[in-house]
Length: 353
Image 1 (cartoon, rainbow, N blue to C red):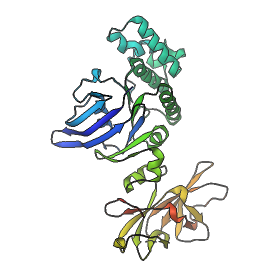
Image 2 (image 1 turned 135 degrees about the horizontal axis):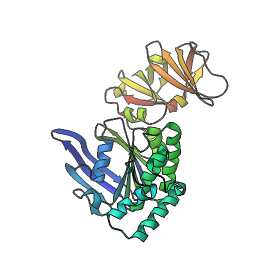
Image 3 (image 1 turned 135 degrees about the vertical axis):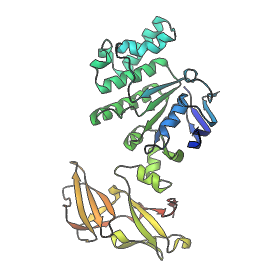
């Protein structure tokens, strides 16, 4: 197994640059997730690692091998696509062993490797079936099995769960996590779903417009975001942002009709800031009247109240317990001062106090 190193990697299509000098180190055996909104460059970057897209500038290595200009077949990677890419006329057994057969591996070796992948993915009951007789989750497991059989240095996953329904996505997420734990391979996984990123990753790479916004462990990004974009993207439901103004040792928050004590540099006095608060860190005050309950969503053990301020800002609050608010009700909010985040309104950079 091998780690992956990207050194000032650039990708251009003609005059349009889509990947902007990315530096990244993925350790041997690490599960790294590329996450970001549509069009941020995450799938392009993955395809560059696979060799399916040429690298315009910079260098790329897998282990101690420079693979920047290598053909995909020489890189020691296997990629799992969201579309499964199975041969419809072949059985599960034949699909998993086809790559080795084409490379003229001995029949005995193919049988052994297919048997091992079958055991890992629990596909014993489906070996003689063809793809049409399989569910979406089973097809994706076969696609993963085909990658395992090749014995790659690095596994690449390009949004493999996006074609599955909600229940199957949870099931396959558990399968992929178990697979990584069992075989310990380096894995790079692309998704726009930050829940997948949070639950699977050892390391998350947050991308926006072809650049890395922040890299870190899931809970490090959640607890200590570097900017407003990362703070809003990591966490579900998303962080609430409210307009604020820095006063004398306090932040005035119009949406809450309140001021919060804060020791902040004198240079920020009078400047606009964005105040971030996560839904789970807010508590509803039934005695308050600054906000109106616009909508509630009950999910059983937890519900979400969507509050509207007089200035039109929407705030989401997580509620647990038996006493919950009703639509149309006027309420206030309370929170611990240590729970909120400050961001520069102009640059969106985190203001650390």
